[in-house]
Image (cartoon, rainbow, N blue to C red; front, top):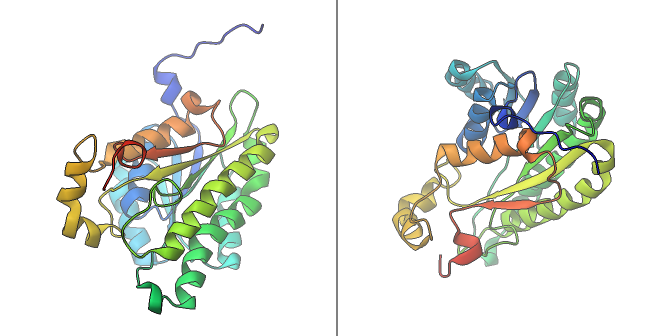
Length: 266
């Protein structure tokens, strides 16, 4: 049996010298993740469609470390390639596919556009970015320290059925979870891990309407009796990106206070 190699506690979560990309990193869960990676020592590129939003987020996050914002509309294949060319040229250790969209509308009137828009950003874009950035990730990964892909899914994607009419969102996130497993099997031998995080209710623009209406009720029914906090999302991202998560691949991790796995009626 090979000798065990013990890493110091701090080293388990140290991302010094790592390069990361967080899509949709200008707000909500993306900002939480970007902040966590920066505080762990990584250099982080964040992306979003709007240039002004990117600039504002870069200013906010710069107090935590070396951050760059790069505007790109990731619902378009050519824009995914443009972002990948920019990021991949400097090397990439960590890819966080977080950018996403949600469309709520009753079943009877749910339009084609609601499928096209949501699937393009939630499912196609992560795949396109993996395709384009795989050479950079392969160069970065080793058997001891693989490169990391972290897909941001949702407990609504096959873990828990939400009450809201979010058909294309739930379908896209369930597909992203399975895509995570498929990619993990293929890329593991190439020293790239692929995992997914399935968030529950976190304060974000996407969840704002729901939390305003029933946030207290959701928190009261959750086993941990609260909503998600910034550190909860930052922590799982740093774990998956660091030495602590190096032997984990093909997983879908609910970060939801136990709502999807143990609670009923939420």
